[in-house]
Image (cartoon, rainbow, N blue to C red; front, side, top):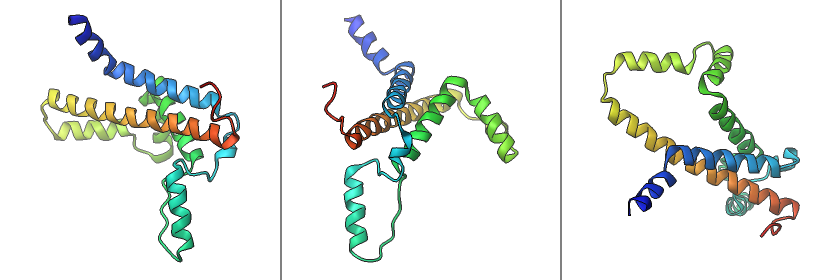
Length: 156
């Protein structure tokens, strides 16, 4: 009985969530052979249909969540930050913007005395949720790319 409980806990661990995300992005990267083909292609088919309908009904406000290429670049960037570390990415941003996120978080930490366990659980939960959603986006992008180039049914 203890084994079932342990395997369930491990299935939902942060390490497994991170590995699923990294695996999904690696699969996406191996599948998307020509990233330039996905420029200006909406990630969600339903959104694309709704955007076309809205555009045909006259002047409307159009807000794009980004095309497949934008998601592709974003997901690869997040994966690289996870694999190589946030400090390295923070140094790159610091060179571009002047002040790093690590310095800002240190300033915030000095200003606030929080319950560290509560803060940890809050961020852990948030990280788990975000990684799960990003994994879904990577899988969606991979499947949409296959549909766009006509290999959507391969491997199934």
